Image 1 (cartoon, rainbow, N blue to C red):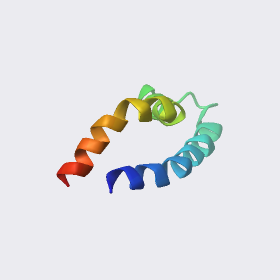
Image 2: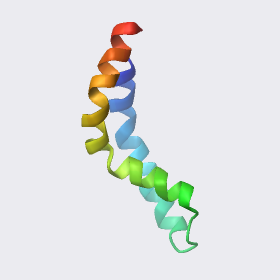
Image 3: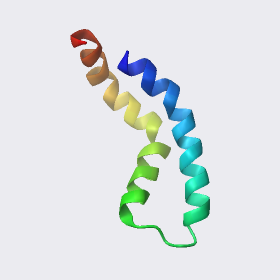
Image 4: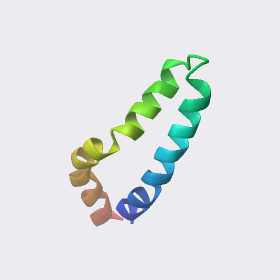
Length: 61
C-alpha cells in the first residue's frame, strides 16, 4: 500500500519540485526547500535504500 502510493506520487512530486525551484531559485530559497528538492531529485537512490523498510511496512499494515 505505502509503496504503491510513493511510486505513484514521486513523478508528480518531482514535477512540483522543478516548477517550484524554477520560480524560487532566483530568490535563493532557504535550506529546507533545498533539502526537499534534493530528496525529490535523488528519489531513485533513496528508493533503493527505503525499499526494504517499505516492504516491512507493507507486511505490518
